[in-house]
Image (cartoon, rainbow, N blue to C red):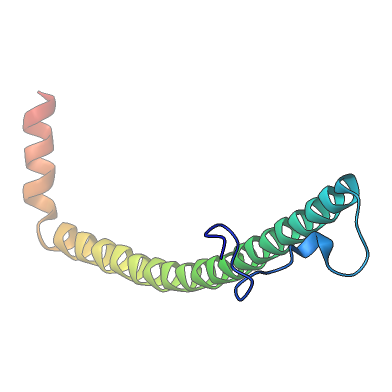
Length: 105
């Protein structure tokens, strides 16, 4: 028995099965298969980017809603501050006017 050739485990190479395919055709077939794999990979990347874009749009909408609530609360705080200023001025208008006159002299 030849140590380099074992008839029990001998397998026919893929190119030699059935019809003989010239090497350039085989290379083209491999290149096509690689292109298909690349296209599938790109499609998966595009699908992932699309889902991330949708997620970002949802987050942006939630951020806008939150900012609108904060904006309303901010305006309420401004109104209360204005009312407090008017009350303070009404209660202490004499002292405020005297103090301003002292500064201007």
